[in-house]
Length: 441
Image 1 (tube, rainbow, N blue to C red):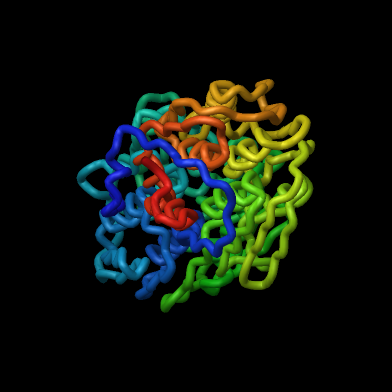
Image 2: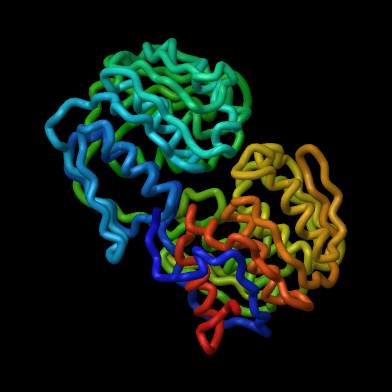
């Protein structure tokens, strides 16, 4: 998917060079979550839309090509300018003849399941082997009440998913929030095109609430009103219009996390421009966790700065920011005492079982980790070199690359190209921390 001149994306492994300290401004790519949301909204708007500062990674490019397959929009990608230009074709939205394949792109797949309800005909949506294991049953159960027939082809609640569309009429439905907040976001976004008002009632507590806040923020930016009762009820009035025009994507807080972690473990300084105190991204709150661990932070309107300090373990509930758990875990490996990370069961069904993966790979580096169903207890020490398995998971590759900056001995990252899922220029960005511009060998 995302093209890059960096040969490391096709290399079998890379070895991270140690770094004594850092004192830099680091620019990270646009938010994957916001890019996906703006792509979805642009495809439903009927208006020409330009998304600037977009993240052009495997996930977002899969999604862009998927919406184009319905025939109602044309998508132009400008990688050099980090821009996605979406233009209506004037044709109706129809199910494509070929199945839609999204690789390991979880958010796009969940958004597409509901979106296919607007397309005349039958759409098949699938992904890679891991995606075909991930649960979609709660979303499939919620759609029939809105007029959409969506079923798992194999009857197991996981992709491939078959959607019979052209019938997203709206109404009232119920959805569980216990597995993924993306199900709720998928319904809210696609309810804009429903024939009548759509009421979405949560049957239990919603996990990862900041991701729904991001959905609502993107909708508001595009001129759409959603009524709500906390996290128990959302009402999307029918007949609203999504504005077109230009929109700017802020930097990715998950991508930022690796460089915050780097400054923390090296006792250095990093400033991330373009993101600040007004961000709705839940992963921004990693800054507060690192401050509790002993770092010094400054969060302004348009920048975040972190300086490392004497690191100590903390107890922390990470339910609202699961994607940055691996980054925090790397800092915990270098902290004095034990860090207890709880309420992270959702990590079991990500691109890999991230609790198991982080546990296994930190143990390779000599760090004591206790693994629980929904928690990890990490006792800091002196991590040593190891060969790291990445499980085809971008976040495992990137967080252990950061751990390698200070490890005693070589840290080798296998299959480094998996970072293209969310941060295709990760290795090049890591290079900027070094005076000679080379982070790996």
